[in-house]
Length: 259
Image (cartoon, rainbow, N blue to C red):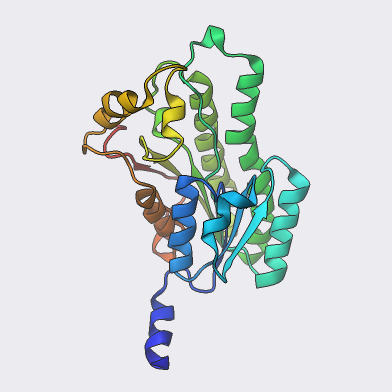
């Protein structure tokens, strides 16, 4: 029995690795955390509230209730995880917010700043900490969950799309800057995903269920909404040694929506 258990551990793609996941309490975040735990990783989850991560209880999961815009707290999370495990192998930026479809003349400057801060500025804060630990180690993988809307825009989402375009560009810049240190950085563009956030993209007062069918699901050539597990599979690949020569790329997990 012990031999079989040892073989199983050796087959796990993330055995003994430490990964930090933001937005761990969201639909995609939970699927990503579960996938990584199932592959042997120790995972630190960051979300605004502990309750959002309550169902992720596991001996290798450590929840941190924190704002991803609080630089001091994020610094502490990375420090505590490095002190506990001796390494930081991966960072998955899955946190983000949506924009309800709104004409630009009805979008406030505060709305713009909130979207840019949470969807783009937060990446700077977390990646800065990741680089501090990954560069001396000579390895590591940073993944940004952006959006297919950055390449296939829809009306009324101009501020959200700007934030996701910035996220992709920032990640590409990280890839070239950190390559000499052996650290990789990649982006995932999900298509319309079957999570609680999907309904938030509809115009205020619109029928979200009708929009789900007529706007989102019908826009996917492969005929269904993207599942959180689809994204988790892509994250696992980009974090793993299977992707050791993949950096600066954007992986579309969108059922063909980006075509």
